[in-house]
Image: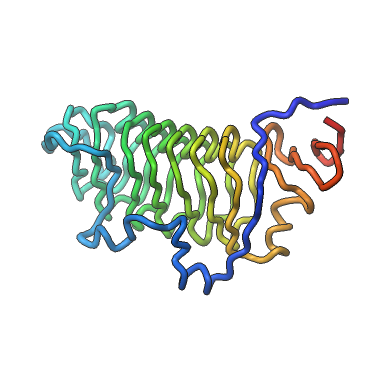
Length: 262
């Protein structure tokens, strides 16, 4: 029985990084850009290339610390420091936005809160500990992503459709890359994963056309916990469906523990 291969991503390498090497070298090839200290005044930004005018406070609908909706038309937005939670679809489809400054009072970002924007950088303050499903889905122009160091999970479809994203470093403490977390990130060549990762779910990298290398901060033994031995390609479909090719063999698919020629 044959299974059609969907969204196959063939890995050319899994590179194992010791913590000391990662920190001292700075992983320069994939960590260049704005550092976490760049916004030492207390916050971070979701940013584009151009600022035209700034929002006013009456453009924000806020209730009990939750930013419910942005009603303005400005391209530059600074979220008030009274906000603790950015709610569901707060800035969804606000295509005029080029910059959103997020204060370090914000701890949670809701479902599709920044979906379908044309921003170029996603740099989140370390105060953020929770990201909901598809929080930044289809930010098609975003080239840079800086995740807060205190999050412990990446949301389902969290950054799917970020077509121009070029680097991702997942913070220590994150244990699962969920389904479609980085799907359709067609310019993403690699990702850096912490040793805490124990599971990479199906379609996590679906349609990532140039994705080739995983930089893993753990050991081979830790990697084997989340990826079956011998796997060199990550596919899609049901969880535990993996595509791989071994030297001298044709391609095979593993579907819920049973191997089939494909």
